[in-house]
Image (tube, rainbow, N blue to C red; front, side, top):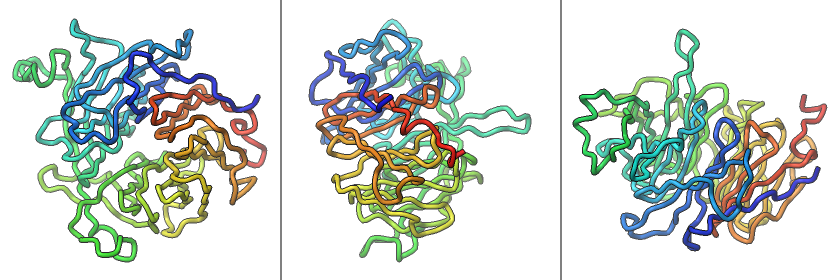
Length: 391
């Protein structure tokens, strides 16, 4: 089977000027979410956003979402819970983190379970949210939510059910009647450019400037070990395992990497070779690193303008996919070539802003573009099936 675009989804009720800023699949592989917003609003408080969900296990109407969720502010990023298929974390342009349950809604249509407290929310738009899974002494999974933003903060949240006394003290106008849970801030870290060595900093930069996080990815063998990128192109490795005071936060930075020449908006860690990660930047390049070496192992320059997204294929140890501003996706197989992509596919006529793989139905991937369209791509055997050398 050849790699092809299976569906192009766009809810006809949406305004045409909306961008698809984030896409993702839930843990059962059946739901795909598309978050619609704008990245260029000047007065964000005057605008709202919509989440659209399609169920791939049922007949798909490409012009109408199976479910829509309205949010009071603009969404910037999303992340489905790794064990609860209807629970979705959403990062907002106003710095809030919101938890949505797509299976419930009150009489007013509100599906919000919890919102981050105003005093501890980010002071800049949320760049990324990601659920983390750790295990307690009884080998039971414990789930946390990590959020990052341009204010240099890394926040670790716990989703907790509200007690009846706590529920009475909530302002229903602010939080909404549906919110029976709360986001409790468990850990707080801060980063500045002083955490980055001078030879990896931009020239003439001030050391006390916040490390404006634009993307991050956690290691698949240790949820507390991750790589964080910034709007200056710099990359740092952070360990989040140790306790950090909420009122007096520490820096989690332990290592720095050779930076990109432009802002870096995409990072992906390998599922199979956990020390490897790949990054993409507005400078038009893709870098392949190992966690323990500052210089990239390989550099790729596709020549297709800005590389807006990148991700490792979950079923292939040697394959990663990059998305470009020209609407093309590029497949790189390190066993076949360390210089050129082995395949390219024209998906859209606009910049592909977001990308996600379905880890249950491994042949599916989703991409969102700047015209608001969500593209579901069916991967062919040539890129999705492992070869003998990989195994």
